Length: 238
Image 1 (tube, rainbow, N blue to C red):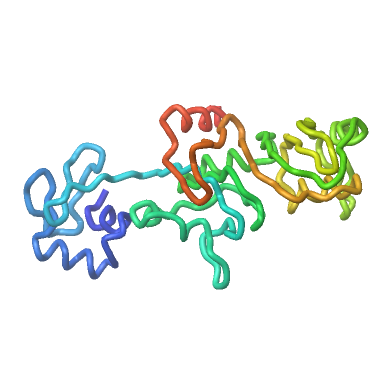
Image 2 (image 1 turned 45 degrees about the horizontal axis):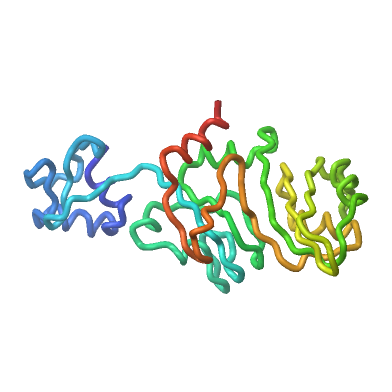
């Protein structure tokens, strides 16, 4: 890979700015200055430094975020804060994007990556990737709701959902539940409960496929996936 492309990908500036870094001798490969942007470098084997600081090149990045409410699942927005705005510079420059969407007021597990192939596999309807949500429901969720969700319910636009697995954790004037679905229609969880005359008052995604939310992450915090977690996700590509 060309050294100027590597530096640009890592956020060291525009082509003009990278060219100046090279011209000024600020870039070294394996201890020797490199001034030609066309120089071919293996970022996984060669040692690259800028102003004496060794850089770590990553082709792909995989991040788990505990998305806070009030932040939208998008790469940019003119009005609202996005999940990308919560990232540190060194992560944002690798241009990750959210895999799927969580509603603005929904919390919980959100995967961000720049691995387009993996994202496609996780979002493909053919893969039936399960997503589990914890929710607080206004009203008492009962056995009839469990049966209805298991059969699939008809949403307000006439769409019949695929079967969902509904578990009631606590009953009362408000009910705590877990719901596992394999789709991601717009506001789907909320609309599914509306078909039963009930309203979602709190919603949090706790898992996606084999990936489970790290409960040590505070709202708005994120971390890189472990190698084991990445392999679990990639296993769906088999």
